[in-house]
Image 1 (tube, helix red, strand yellow):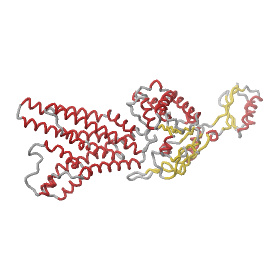
Image 2 (cartoon, one colour):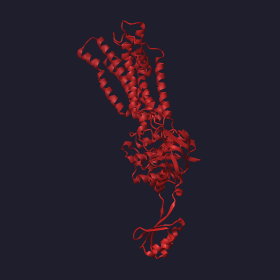
Image 3 (cartoon, helix red, strand yellow):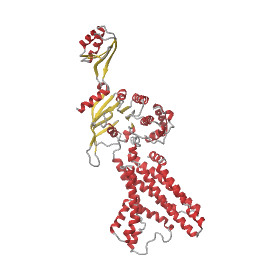
Image 4 (cartoon, chains in turn red, yellow):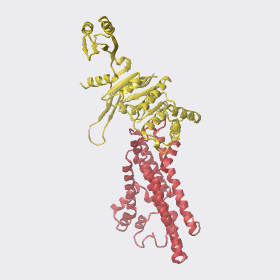
Length: 279
Length: 309
């Protein structure tokens, strides 16, 4: 299994998806120095500069979440069916290894690769902040939960790749993520303010499709202190139930649910791969 | 014990939406003796590749059973003793030949010292020793086929399944593959060869099975399946009426081809020497005397045509 994991990492390093992500991140990295550049160019109060740095950390964490998820989807979506179609597994499958070793080995390879990327990108964000002001630790506090983003999306894409082509697996994963994002960011306020039961059900449902909102709350709890005053606060109206629906608190079982979701997606993908014909 | 044995093996592919089920392999009974080179023949769509995929455990049978070297097909124990060269494959082209073999050796759970020795041996055997540090992407199609063969025999398996091993090779490459097959045979290994190149199969194999519409229609030692026809091409210095008369007394049919060659057909194979005696007795100078042997291609076409009737 470790041989497959190592091979997957070697393969990922050469993938265009990784190179493309790196190029985009380097471009974004330049933007991370904007607070300091603006402060030096236009002056302003130290509090404003501090707020700019805080926003940059929040934005940086979001960027890391986004790009690590995209990278994981691109690497996982072609892991099984596309590799079979391209003939990469033709000489590997007859080797004395169980199919689960191949599946888990590939999954582990992509997850280790994406996790290493997330750690490096977080370190770069930390370095950028440290160079502009003093070293800050919030991004490190959020790291364990940010790491779950590529794991979540990558596992979903991998499960789909056990029976779908790379294009369909990535499309379905992105669609599921988009639905969860749309439900959390657009439907949730509508459902709360207008108290539409159907929309509320859809929002709840979206958390079952992909627990992105749950994961977002877990990350948010680690970086809440950085949010500028007045931003992301509950409106000064509405019942307690509405406000609770609008901004649900982090529950003890949230992380269990996310982990369970990942494990179930992995097992479902594994069972499908185990039972399907490969030719 | 057979190297490969199948009993009532059947595979039906059912389309997900609409369409009729396709019977790829139908009640296949196959016995491959240990230590032989076995040719697995059949027209396109006969079910050869599906059968191979079931033998290596990639495709699950709908019914029936298969054993590889006494173990259930697809089991880890069977895979440990099996080497496979697929028809369509792609290797990770960023690896060098040596790295690729090391990867496959690790997957085959070979011990490190033995793996290094075997890498040297198989690279030498397939003629790629000098390209061991070259990346796979630099290899021609033929060289990729040869490195594929090298990975199939790397762990010294008892059974080697080769699916169209010579399809991308030039005549020299084909000869190299034949040599590897003979080398494996000499070492007591079983080689299961699926190829469309019947002349190659005829040169390499001692057993064959002909598959049609998912069933084995002919199976056995090549020597037994290929009957010697009682047709002889005789070459003399000059055809004379006396020679023709003498031959007609012995042969059922005599047909001059040109001024020097005659084709004669006797009813029984045992009467073939009488033709030679008749030519000499009639005062003819015998230049060559060639009994025509049925080729594998003849057998194959005849078998498939009979099945089609």
